[in-house]
Length: 279
Ligand SMILES: N[C@H](CCC[C@H](N)C(=O)O)C(=O)O
Image (cartoon, rainbow, N blue to C red; front, side, top):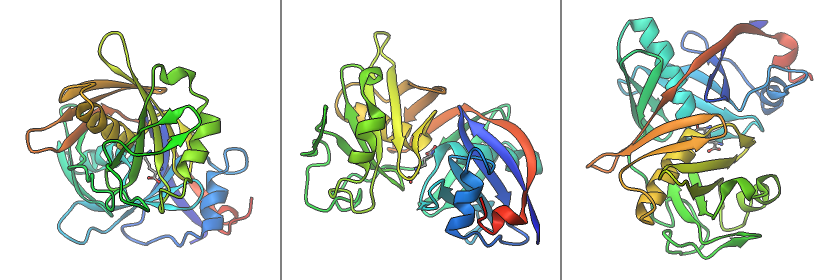
């Protein structure tokens, strides 16, 4: 196969190259993943998603790669985009998507605003995971001006730092240092969040394996959980990311729901040179 079709989508600017591998799985080396991710000589993406045949009754298995070529267990915004594609395909308003983190349910009223049940968070120190025992509600970690994060696993690892004003944090500097702190043996997605005057939450994210993104769905879920634990929010809140707002809710059974818009940017095909990792 010398060319592979893809769909370029985004959720609040968190952007994805989505490949339908249900008929034929693409062979993607780390070099190819990085070549495709290159925003000047490739296509450019935060995550590359491969739709694979589901193994346990779900509509699809969703494999997630970060732009550095690492594999991620969860990707909320991409799950909303894949849910949209499946709903369009089957003319339905609900889908089930399997990821390494388990089964996720997607629903919609209009197929443009997609809500995903991201499941329930794991909060044990070994679930995050951390390299030493810690109270994950108040982790003993300081990175520059950031300290005392909440650790949450939404299928993938997150550290949420609450600060006075998230927009004043030098995330380019402190994000990669926190992401790769030895406390996080699988690294971590780093969120800085602050309460807004209207009670909403401002959220900026340094994503594991990517860097600063315009939005991050699983980080929004982790931040919703952390804000509720810290008494900064109730069970519902609007989280304002650089790319726009996500509607968040924690259900009575502890599942985290995330809702927001999706968009198709364009359709294309990956050339053999990119697949060979040539950039
Ligand atoms: N953008 C994604 C998060 C990807 C997480 C990835 N950076 C990881 O390694 O966990 C989201 O919307 O949830």
